[in-house]
Image 1 (tube, rainbow, N blue to C red):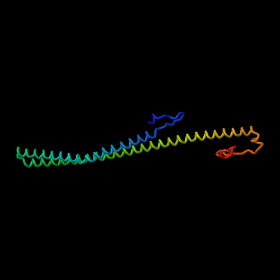
Image 2 (tube, rainbow, N blue to C red; image 1 turned 135 degrees about the vertical axis):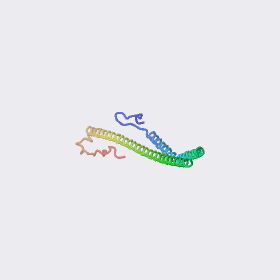
Image 3 (cartoon, rainbow, N blue to C red; image 1 turned 180 degrees about the vertical axis):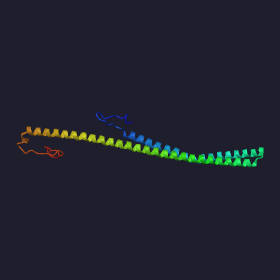
Image 4 (tube, rainbow, N blue to C red; image 1 turned 120 degrees about the horizontal axis):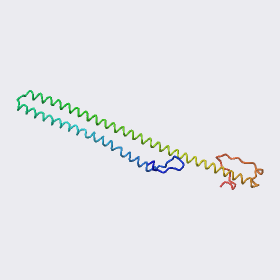
Length: 195
């Protein structure tokens, strides 16, 4: 937007459309909640993930129990089947706990990342706004300085013109009346009186 905006001739200033810039900032602000929405959905789906993990564990346990029962029927080794079932239960429980911990770690990491990205985008938006404000202030100061110089030159021309008139007019000749002094910030009185 800055590169496409018109430049002020003979200066390094650029005119930026304020409404267009504010619209762009609004778009940035409106799109930020999407990242939070995604993180919120992940947190809401955490229970579903944990439930699926638990169902998966139950299926593995049921499969292990069926397998143990088959071993009992085929080999008659009741003790070995119980030990095998217990081992599988412990292994499944360990895997489920590890999966739960990993899901919680992933959710927390995504939340921190979303907060960090939001903080960085806020800092960037504030920095850009401050830069735009500084540019606007510098531009206004430059315009006012140019106007001040032009007014000073115009006042000088007016004074020179009046002095020339006074020198050419015997009524206003310096010998006819004492010279008047005026400060730079005060205009001389009008010949026609104040109106």
